[in-house]
Picture 1 (tube, rainbow, N blue to C red):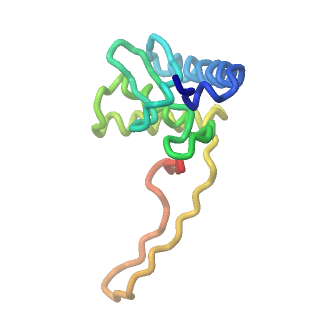
Picture 2: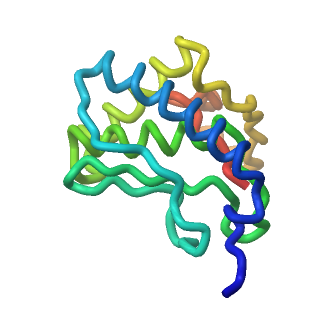
Length: 148
């Protein structure tokens, strides 16, 4: 039987990472009155998602990149955590879910838990149109971090 990516990762590092993620999850969940059963590392052979939240409150989060196998940045894990925690209130991807997910991320950022790399937007080059006003390149809400 072959080793999975998480098995080749140092077990104490996984335990430490999951303990940190669980502490941060408890803090965020408590603030918003969310209840979950457990947060676990996703199986290494799961490649089609970064996390999942089941109806029974079990949350699983993938720790490694699906293609490279490298450990994901902690900010990526927190983003996934907030996404899955938002499903505890909105078990869909509708407008309410997206607004609540952004609220969770902003709280995590304010608490120093979520620290994504700054993302610099490249301006889109278009032909000049005198009828069109220039729009600022300012995001409407929090910037989604790049996981790759």
